[in-house]
Length: 162
Image (cartoon, rainbow, N blue to C red):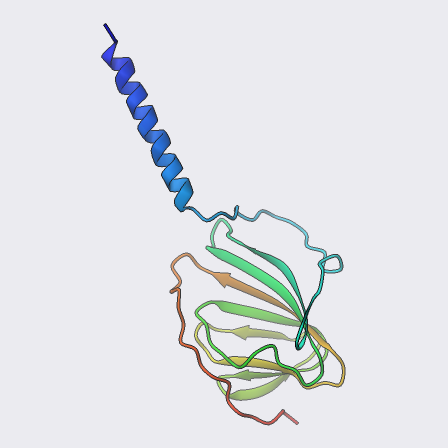
């Protein structure tokens, strides 16, 4: 005669295993990022129609749904895309060159060492207004409770900052 206590334990273990598999199936496939040094020199630059882009990282962390960074190089006179807004916040740090930054329709310049913070859902755009390529680092963070969509906004027409 089977021991019902062992059957109950086996049934509970099977149920817990099935639940763990179901939860794992719903979880993102990316693993949580840990401390690491990223060497931008060895990250391959992928050509774009406006310059080049290096993907540094894009993964969840212990406190963020997603943490992303890339390095963009813009050719003179180029912009990576039209001015836009999105729910995540981002920080850009100018490594080289001169950028015109539009923040809520107001132009300003950012040069080597300059930092550009773009707040959630505020209109922003960037363009290389120098005579040489401009390179900047982009860091974006996506909290777990951040809305998944944002209103798309076309770029305003503007003249370069003099």
